[in-house]
Length: 192
View 1: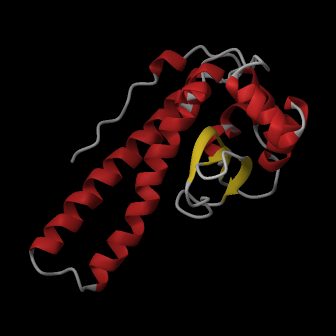
View 2 (view 1 turned 180 degrees about the horizontal axis):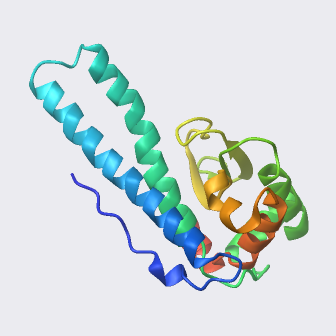
View 3 (view 1 turned 90 degrees about the vertical axis):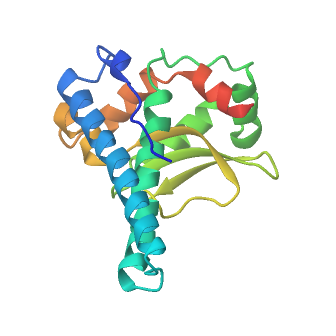
């Protein structure tokens, strides 16, 4: 299997995100796609050559989760951007947020507070596939901290590359811009 980088150029011109920031971010994402493909190729080759017990094999297997999740989380992130940020509170997502958090406003406050925590990583609104409950979760690295059995519904990148070009160290301003561009229809599709 070879992965192909998706084209997210339609996001250019999105309010709050400069062309430079988005172009750089797309290039970073393309690097994760290339890294995923290269590691998959090298792991298969080493395995075929009988090297699956080697330290090199072990390290590539560990690194694969970082590259693959870096690719996939960026795809989820870019896909849930490009909207106008307005959630219909009567929609499926709106009703689930109200059930889990008491109101949309309480969910938004919790999601933003999670995004403002010190550190680098991701903020993900997850749905537990067993209980159908929603959680806002902080993810340190691409492959660390994911909730087992949960589906990502909304993904926000809070690594510096996602905002520093446009906002410097003002992460809260970036988070506000992110909220203004959420595509809730994409989130709704993930609920199905």
